[in-house]
Image (cartoon, rainbow, N blue to C red; front, side):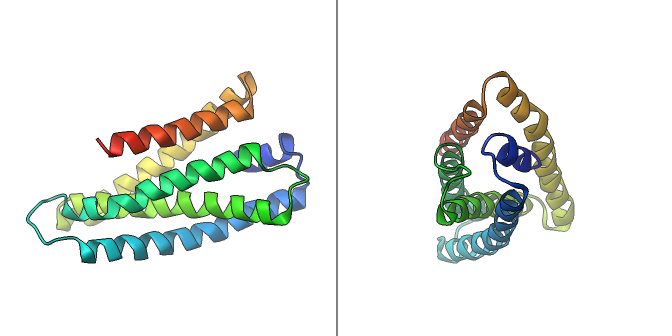
Length: 174
């Protein structure tokens, strides 16, 4: 989310201190998100019925990622429509935490699911490929997102991301 400080400064008119606090809170949320995603998805795996289905573990972990996608859309909506330089500290805190928790939680959960789909003797390679996909996604959010924001508006860019979250939710549930 390399564009976040620029958005907070240029669009929301956060001062440097408040923008850095926001990004730091997102980082703390990311730590919590990774731990929560692991804990919750492991709990769902333990409750999943035993079967020979190759996708059993992924299907068990999937609700965590779906939930994180939905909550991420809510966090981005709050950022876009409820957060400003005049926002109370609690709105800023909740927004930053929601975004941090859901992004980092999904990264780790999707990485685990990808690793479980591959052969056990290639778990490291599968994990690296999933991490690579995440990094490539990060690259593509920089320029394309700021280009949409430049040509249209940041609100349009965030609505686009929210729609992508909904689209991902629909695709995952097919």
